Length: 432
Image (cartoon, rainbow, N blue to C red; front, top):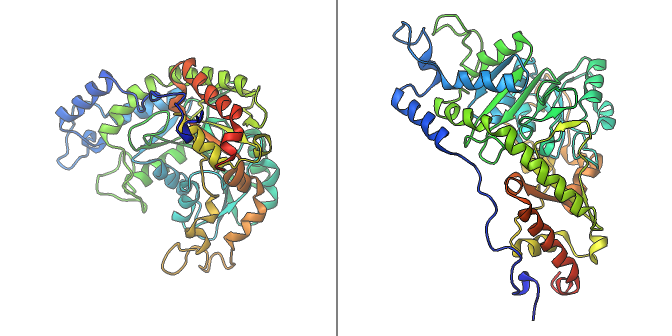
């Protein structure tokens, strides 16, 4: 009789892991307030609204911006409708445009790179570090040219990139830094400095899977008043604070966050620290358990990260320790045991058809525009990014953050399922 669930045996875990997103009466109360107010967008609280005059009440979005920036020890914040919008305005505010190059990692969500394209600039991919899957500072300088305008390190999975070294390189070459902290809500370095405040601008996402969720949403934070003013203007059609409503100063977008999103995010922020602490506690417990298993190696989390977020718990699979059983078979076996584990990205960003065909616009801008005046072959990055290739093709395993907001029994089930597979490798080998 088969022992493994993939072959008809009983599962290690029958019940689901904790649901996400979490909400309670706090969200319901604030959403009801917005609904009943009839003021569903932040512009409804402007004294220069269409009819003029002073409007009573206070914007939930503005309140959230103040609370989020204070929590992350930043002076300013601009909330947006999506995380990718936050990237767009951050890049624009730093003056990145046609002919400019921006260094990005290839192992992240595509928006990190497409936001560069949206500003008619060129994404240049630099490989990740094998221990952290964050942008490798050792590879950055060889990618810098006289066109490099910015670097976008990603705090992947919620572990801070090596911002000390990245900032040193940026300062040396007079390059701006945008932190993609979409995974790093509330992450704190040992000196009390928070994710999003190491570079010129930081951005976060509130898409439903994130550690703070509003379905969609984003925010930029900065300590630079001029950058804040530009970000606010770009997200608000090019308006400027304190100026007449129909006076437009620059080409902007409508990237405003709705009052409903702001209402949801205020209590989401209120429980962030407690849930991040629970994720960290359970992640450390799992790391200790996995240390007893050959062939499974968790990514390194820098000891100087005082408070990580564990948006993703990532560990590496070495099939040599599992009788050469392919990773996809190992994943299917764990899924069958009731463990929702995935391989993550199927391929690095540069292997998307968008980049291989350079299908960026009808006339192939920004690559073939006169400001750039050179060609770029995105298929060539395969040779330059072997760590990203290996992560996608062979070794990465992802567990999502909601698996870590329960208790240690949940983590024990993950480990029990892994040990069950290890003890029955010969059975699994027959279907691999």
